[in-house]
Image 1 (cartoon, rainbow, N blue to C red):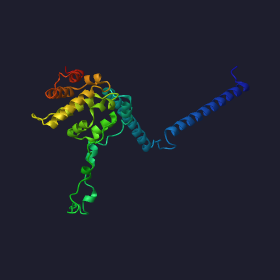
Image 2 (image 1 turned 180 degrees about the horizontal axis):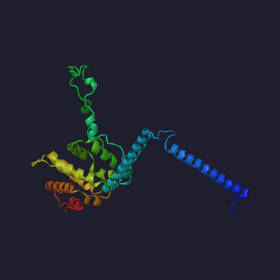
Image 3 (image 1 turned 180 degrees about the vertical axis):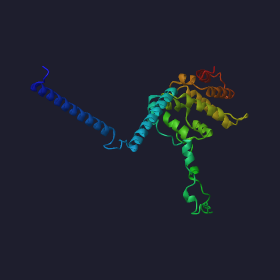
Image 4 (image 1 turned 135 degrees about the horizontal axis):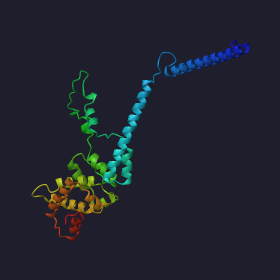
Length: 280
């Protein structure tokens, strides 16, 4: 029993050889696996894989632009809902929410009113000749002119009100240009509280400004009274008049006090106007 048989030695040797082979295969597989991981983490050698900076920069800029666009669209929706605009105006505001207005102050600050044709090669200004007359800068020549046409829709009125009437005096003359009976047709759907408030402030500031008004001023006051009466026939007037800001309400009270001194408020038609405005 103490001697090992040849058969036992052969079995032991075969087992040892099999274990050695398995161990060698495991070692080889482990080495290959670690090498694969190393090659995956490192770009085939000693240099690590690096994402191209230009691609990362483009993706970052695109993500920032998308976030800014979504924020601008969301702000436009909230502001449009606060102004109680109709669907067409809401759709128009949302569609251009990402655009910058041409009248932005930072754009005007970058635009020069003096082109290169007004200067010599040494940088001095060109002296105007007697035949040509004074040199007029392009910005002064391209100043907006007061509108001369009666608007036919609410967007046309608001566009002319904001773009073609830069001063309150221009806005006042623009209101006198519109026949009062056209207002219900122009604002068939509605007029925003902000726009109506601006109109009331302009009418109050430029109607009957002198203590002894002339006949022309009295005629303008009568036209303003007719405009106020026509505004009561626009869409959703009862709701819009309740949403006026304090400045507009104060202007309405002041304007009514001026007009009551020139037109008898006891006349049925005029009394109905002041009642609809909530002043009686």
